[in-house]
Image: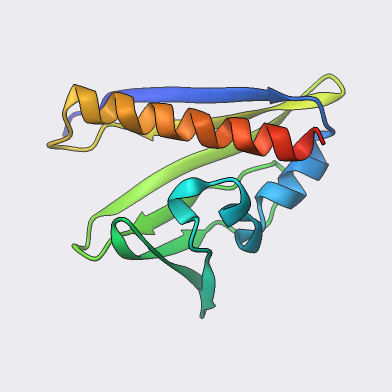
Length: 132
């Protein structure tokens, strides 16, 4: 088994890391900054459901934790499961928000770059909300 190409996107936010984690880690807040989930997330058991450009997706989050980890798995209608590593890490009085993207099999370089630009835009939206 080979590894997939990876890209880590990040954004510095001038706000205490736990405040950013508490906000960003709530699935009900994600539609405010994560445009791929702009329709909002509805709870269904221990998972969350979103309706968007990829159809209906199921999102499973790791439990709330003391490490700033908001990792989640997105399962799209085709059954494809995409693991997303999302971390809030202290940096002085503020924090770094880091999202690791994995280039999925069959994804072109252009699609990967477009997804990266989309995620970077979302991280900028989170920064704007947190620094208001």
